Image (tube, rainbow, N blue to C red):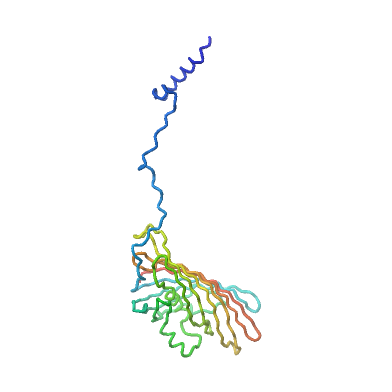
Length: 303
């Protein structure tokens, strides 16, 4: 004998209610939906914004020490055959900077060594044991840097100049000092320098574009770090004599740099620089091309 379908439905519902221990919900035949948790129990959305600075710092003068590691890859012609050479150098720059009415007076020293070099690379001795002292002035309004040795060399303009490669690490650090660390600031300047490349004095005329921004840094007391990025487009010219032949030099250089500064103290926290140099040397009977890609990292170390 079959029970009415309504009886079967009543028995099934009763059984489900007993098993689930929910007589009230079963009596109404509607599923129970729990209410949403209070708003204060929701996980907060991650903070991805960058907090503005209360006031931008000034570049931190005083004593400092930095390790500069540079890797250069040189592609050039050797007897009509393309050749690639590598040069890795590491320099320790100690400096002591003092603010003046025009910028900074800086004294310091450099110790440099060649970590690795291909046989075809002409470079400084494998290690310079004694620190090379330097003294320089930095005009922060124009980014002009003048070493005391520059004034002496300008009267003769003869190359090679001793310790040119070693002092390049200090020169590159000082010429990159920003005129301000105020976020949002941008500026363009021109920089004209003369330096030796082997036996030739090379004049560089560069246009540099700077921009100051902020990056999040949760571990920093300010929650941010100041980032200064700049690009350089330079034209290079030079002339001299090599093995009795007159040689004319022409070239271009592109550079991109990124520096980080402490948002509270203005201390340089580190930097990365990448550059590409293309140079052509022409004499009456020969043309020589070379390309140099270089990457450098700067990090502060204990003084």
